[in-house]
Image (cartoon, rainbow, N blue to C red):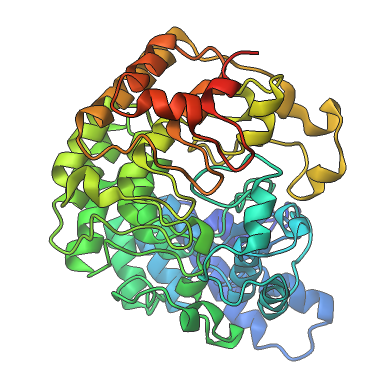
Length: 494
């Protein structure tokens, strides 16, 4: 038996404990010795509280996690990331939790994704949030009767005082957190593409109950008592989503075909950003990555895929996300593969058509804010970047401050480049060639597509002229008023 050294037992680093280090070593001798030492010492009855604590940090389930250290580490995850299935088996045989994260940490992390949470929860990176039941109760006090109910008047009003994205809430979950994401061991195995480790975890009983069944999101599942939530239901992601992000095609095929995972899973714990895998691949993954491209092709050919599945609450269709890219080739390709084509996209919960989205400004820094008619009329961004912040402070706290310093990015203008102008014009041209475009369509703020074009910095006159020349285009330009009584013509210019 290997004899442990002082270096092997060095526990001075909080996020690199002896057991986590040993789990990542290809030679399992140190890991075997630590597990044996832990098993022997645990049987002793006269250990002090401090000795017992130090001993537990050597155990197979000795996780380093939670808001105290902003990390979610465990020996099991360490072995998986090192692609060491033998070490994984040793840990599981010694009694390690196959989920690789404890339920308390996962529950606390996912509270930050609850719709209607307090804005302080968006920046709580160094302490625990209130329990799920309390946060849900507070959301109900705001009129959110359940997590998937239609957008409330309060939520719609808040949007008019900020610059949220068209596809989610003003405070994007996780955007302001300074901590790593909380993943289960199965999700980590999917990220690194280790099929053997994933199968070992599944055989050991790792929870996957949320991911292997075709269950719709409904009020009961979102509002169920905290005690009923298992690890997979609490996760804000899934192995399928993580495999796609990493471009792990073989893993994705294994999850969908061999393991029976759903190609339509939407996170129960993250309702406002519950993107099904297809929309997730389009909106949140690097489409220039060949691996992601292959995963996208596999998804679209899967027999159980619901290609027209929308996000809950905001009702975003995959083609809405594709349009936001201003990539005509991507848009045409997807429309030809999705049943119903462009017609299937319809409108979002905010009343946005495909043409609306093609005409939205990328961010708040791309509008003619010096024109008061524009500033009061346009409050919606096209960006798919979940990290972009329209204001230095989270909503609605930013409304209490009005200086350029407090708002930050909101006062820095970034006109479109020539290449961006061409990409937008080509995308709009694709949509106009489809006979289903309605130039008169208004969103919930009464804006037509021409309103958004007219209020955007450095907008190509050729693009606006292209729409004005369509049937009804000139009428919309001159006469169509939004909810603020403003026409596109009145928004044009500074």
